Length: 356
Image: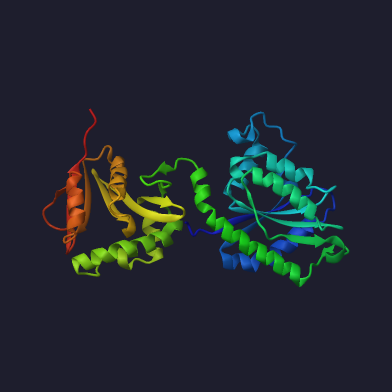
């Protein structure tokens, strides 16, 4: 699971002139800002009125992903980039405002597997009936509503046009944000599976995607697990993968094309490639120790080799005493090269087959 900062959209849903919503939204973002920073989340305040959304005017069904109008495409980008939502909503006639229903109806896949929190305000019910109404809709869109909510009774929290909720309501908002962040991170694997071009992996439920700098923490853990055995076999701790910091790994993740194999938020294996002249260099082939012997390493190696089109040969290296690795590579057509890349390491290479 990536450790990147989360993007939480705080959406004020009322568009009525002189509505209380913007003041509630401002109170909420001011209250949550310190906690959001500690939780690794960025709050993005927005009002529905700023979106310029007319009543749904797209010809194609929202699930098709076809967006003809610029206002729809802009809204789609905003929602797609978000990892979770807090809807600040009034209650109109026992339900949510039509503006929120309309904004939800515009899109479909962009909402999926993201948590949704609610801050409601109203008179007798403090807006809670609007939240119950909205939850029926958001679950249909595969949004995941939180159990924690914040309900503000207008008479109790306003002083003229000023909004001043009590400390207990601020605490409730902070609790809601903490739950939202936990759920957003837990749902990350579900969201990744919905995104374009994940490659099905060799194990049930696994998939491969390119790794980026935000994945440095998971790569750090995998390297420590995998290369300790190499250190024991080769009787040396002078292995770069054991000493790289997350900052070091972020740097080379930006430079190498690295693919990770994931399942349920866990990084199971990885491999990286980079072209130098006519050579394709393959490195950091790693498989979690408990998954060895299931063909994962061979699958990752074949995936890496698929980037070798147009190259003359594929080159990789391993520890001189890593006989199991050497045997694996030789079975895949690699041959030992004379000399060593560095002390205690051997290089192997194989020619790239030319398509006829």
